Length: 282
Image 1 (cartoon, rainbow, N blue to C red):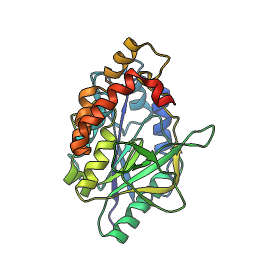
Image 2: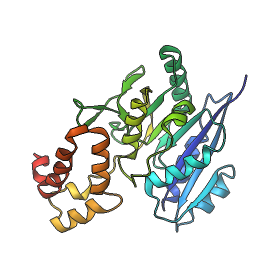
Image 3: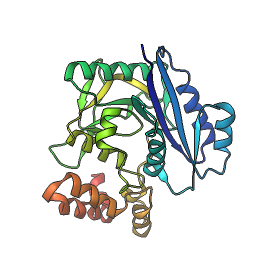
Image 4: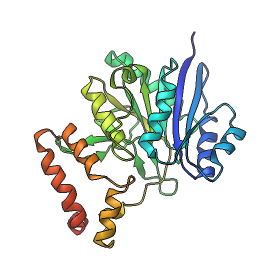
């Protein structure tokens, strides 16, 4: 029986211990008989020695060098482009602040097989994460709200569930999807590239599924400053335009792709939200 080949894709910037802990959990997975995992890690201009520490602790990891301006989407595109040069069965997106449970990858691979056998084609499998302190869900598969650009998290159950798209913290993508939908879009720097990818894959005829249960732990990112009423307007505008915010041009591109004729309404909504964040607090 041939091995199942999985390429794990990560990007990191100056959180060495977090990255090392993530890789340790990845390489401690159980039930991996017949599975080979190769890891592609983008060191996006780290100045804390992350790349060297990874090379020493995990010599099999392929460390790729970025210039510090790739951010999440750019780093993941870089890693994926390198991995696509080989013939992998699956590509695992993994945020370096996500700690996988021991059986996470086995669960996701089994889910992928279930989806293929029950629906006749491969797709995307999303892993849900929870807060390590509270146990509450933080990331995973999401449901689109009435064909708008609003999304709600779907809590994992004891069986796979269909979703519309996903957060990119832990996602298993089959080679069939990668061949058709391709890489992450170059139009997005940091945010919404993962959501865009899931929507594009579904448009290409594939489906997204949430694996049963939680696959790991990951803390929720803090609320963006550009949505905080306590932050002065000048700072909100600056944070909005920051690559790690939600640059208006990228949001408009996302809206044009996925909101149809309604996209100008969503462009306006972004500015209303940054100008009057108290409305959303209510």
